[in-house]
Length: 40
Image (cartoon, rainbow, N blue to C red):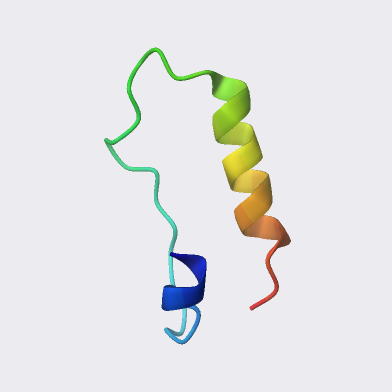
């Protein structure tokens, strides 16, 4: 997903409504950290 969107200026990664309530918040934190760690 990150590679496919890398050519789009201002690409936004959105968790949206696809996160079930029982999802471990630590997993979501790790996803966000991963996205932020990728150089454009």
